[in-house]
Structures are given as C-alpha cells and as structure tokens.
Image 1 (tube, one colour):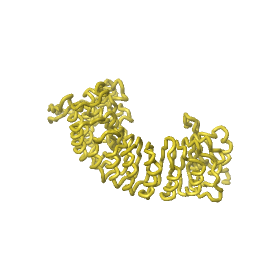
Image 2 (tube, helix red, strand yellow):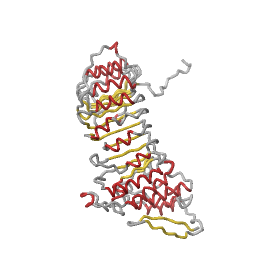
Image 3 (tube, rainbow, N blue to C red):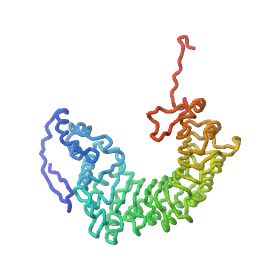
Image 4 (spheres, rainbow, N blue to C red):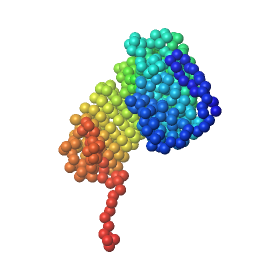
Length: 467
C-alpha cells in the first residue's frame, strides 16, 4: 500500500509519497540483524536520538526487539530531553516515529509522559542542528525565528504523545527582547499547541527573562489554568507569568527560584493566595527588603491550609525569616521542613521547632551557620514524631543536640550528618545506629546513619531442639 511520509526541510514542509513493496521484509537471524544495525549506531550516542534504529524497530515484529535492544535504555526515559545537536528535522521525524509506534500498538514509548523543549533552539537554530552564533550574541532580529518549522516540530511531538503527556518543560533561555510581531506569532503558536496539552498537570518553565515586558508562553499557561497540579518556575519570576500561575486553583506542588524585584516581587508576594490545595512549597528567591521571603511565608500561611512540605533556600540573611517560619509551622502541621543557607536560623528558632514541631517527620538544616545549642527544657519538647534528621555544615551545633533528638524521638530511624563523623561513631552505635556502606558516602564527607532493625529483616538463629 502506498504511504505518505512528511519531512521537515530548512525552509518549509514537503510531503512525498512513496510506494512501499507489498511483500514482507525477508527473515534474517538476530545475529545478522545486529551486525547490520551496528552500522546505524551514531558516533556520539549521547546526543543522537537513534532515529534510524527506531525506524528499523517499526519495520516488523522480528526486527523490533533487535533494534530496540541496541538503543540506550535511558535515551527515552519518562521525560524526553534533546541536546542542541538534535535539529528540528530530527524532532519532527521522532514525532512521526512515535506516532507510528502508537498506531501499531508497540510499547516502545509507553513510559514517556513528559517532554522538554528548548524554545530558542527549536525556533531559532539552523535546521541542521547548529546554532547561529551571530544571532546568539546580538539577539533575535525581526525575522530571526523559524516559526512555521518550529511549530510543526512541537505539534508533531505533542500529537505523538497525545493523552500520555502529563509533564511539559519549556526552557526560554536566550529568548529575550521579543518584539510585537514575534510576540503575536508566539502567542498564536502556544495558543494552538494548547489543545495537545489537555492532560498536562505539571508545567516547568525555565529562564524567562524577568525584565521583559511580555511573556511568550502566556497563552499556554492560561489555557492550562484548571488542569495544573504542579508548577516549577526556575529563574522565571516574571510578573505576568506569576500573575497567570496565581490563577491556577488546583496547584498542589510548587517550586520557585530566581530574582523577584519591583513589580515581580509584588506578584510573587500574592502567588499563593488562591492555592488552597497547596501541599509542598520550595522557595529560592531573592526579593526586595519590603516584600521579603518572610512576608511571603506569612501570606502563604493564611491561604494554604494543606501545606505539609516546606523547603526554604535563603541564600544568606532574610529579615524575620525565622519568625515567619514558626507561624506556618503551627498553622500548617508541617511534616517536612528544609532550611538551606540561612543566617537567621539561631538557637531561638531551634527552641521553637522543638516546642511546636509535633507534626514534623523530616527536618533538615543545611549550611545554617548560626544554629547553636537550644535552651528548651527536655520535658517541654513536643517534636517526638521525627523519623529523619539531616544536619549539614552547621558547625556551631554540638553533638549534644543530636543526642537530645535521639532521646526524645522514639521513631527516629535515619540521621544524615556532615559533622561529628569521626568522633560520634561509638556514641551513635551505642544508640543502635550504624553507618551505611562507605560506597554510599557523599563526596563532601556526609555520612548516613540508620537505626539497626528498621526496615531490615533480622535473621534469628534457632537451635536444633527448637529453642
């Protein structure tokens, strides 16, 4: 039967029809197939999507297992990512092959649930996969983007993933100074592809220029308003993007990093107001003095009653951060708390954690240099449900604190320590902890200790007489 195959050229899309032979391919033993297919292996397997081998896998059932076993298993993981060596033509062709695999009900791509697009590379790069260095240096001109070809490649990939697509990542690095005409084209494209993203529940946005007036992907975000459950804004604290994400009422998991100054800071302050179902929040943001991280947490404490996991990367000092965390600790019934690089976390804060952290199951302090010996009386401590304690590079905190936690937390089963590694071994073993094998020790000297008998089957010797 005749079949139609579509290929993406450097300037436009061309469709060619070719007549395929009606007879099936000749049977070849697997050993011979492997020898033949070995000539299709790329010189750089890390960067190559192995499209020729994928094509062979779709020829017939006898070729499929031989061709697929020669493709690296980690090449097509749950989320597809493409190197800068992968051109638009290859993206389009991969979408065609994935669609054909779905049509034939082959399970080659069944585990793929997400895809990552580098927007600048998809729309800006040359068709052969190389990058135009001049455009990279000076920025995109009025005609610098290949809108038609880029849209075709993305649509073909999304069509192939179809209902399996649940996670979408968009990287906008190098996409800046978008003029009005380019913004209209991007708006049209992202409005168009939204219909292929109806099942997307997790959106990751990277490297949006926080100084630009417009955000090219805004129409897509607005179309996903009611379906999103998880969002990550990585170096993307853009005002209009923050305002659009704020209107997504179903957000349960959020991670936000970057610099939020001026109007971006105001938008970030209000981002959690409609997130009534938020369960986990990670913040690594640089904010204004008036609209700081502490105030953001106070706003979140009043609007997010379901939050159980909080991670704060303070990156230095932040006024009133310690006070801001204590309030949500009592309001949210936090189960997991991680604080990294904060100079505001002191012995007073540690006292509050011990007094009010009854719901905590996981507690981590990383590079909190001012953290020191708490003064609370042991009989007043309510933090008794803790199972994991991590202390990394908290030099001012003595080992007596670890002993205190072991004494008051009967469920404690895991310790991750960067200090006390050499001196505390005998004491920890006396409490029933053993360090994990040295092969699992971190390069930076962090040691993991686990409670003996927790989650481990214990062999019991039985005498011959049954005693």
